[in-house]
Image (cartoon, rainbow, N blue to C red; front, side, top):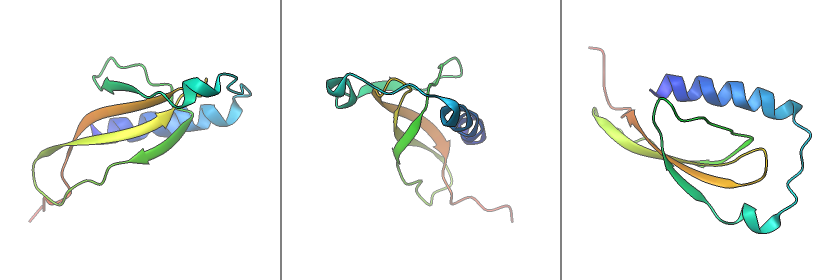
Length: 89
């Protein structure tokens, strides 16, 4: 799932570089919409504001990303990733 999210972010960031829309509603930039990620979530990411740290454990853990869409609206995306503490040996 982490790889899927990273690929989606890379694709959307490349698209964002081509966008020429400028947000006009300043108030909408300050109200974050909280979303739970599913495989059918349609992501519109123009700018990543912050991402939570992934703990050093070997299990699935919650993660959070705050981003702005192409209209300047802030979103908080909750999702799950595998912790970074697993070893292959």
